[in-house]
Length: 171
Ligand SMILES: [Zn+2]
Image 1 (cartoon, rainbow, N blue to C red):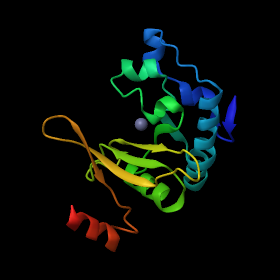
Image 2: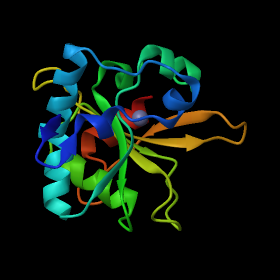
Image 3: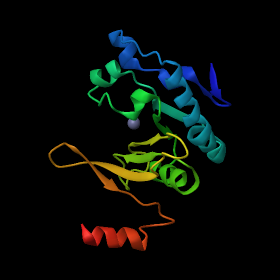
């Protein structure tokens, strides 16, 4: 089943862990509709803008699969609203910045990216719907204790706005 011109349902539900552990990772109709929206509003526009293959490392994850890999069962992946992806040889920061500057999205996370290794990490992006999208841009970093922390991220073109700076001074 094709979700958009360049994306199939198969690549958005594929999971080696699910296959290996015999975990059911089949989406229901709601999940498929959400995946379709994610393709229409985020993945397909990315594919067309960069004109390169978008490689998806993880899309839909059933609650059981989320638990098995140590991620939260409340993750947007479990709702079919999120995917992790990258484009070969394109900086993940550049990819995330472009999404943030040009698309409507719910949450975009630049995951474990380090500036001296442009291909490090990956991009996580979710889409809910026009009204509920938070347009939140974050960076996930691993702290000295090995735990993941999230900090506000800015695209290189916009940077922090005056309001953002005022907010941070008030915290
Ligand atoms: Zn993710």
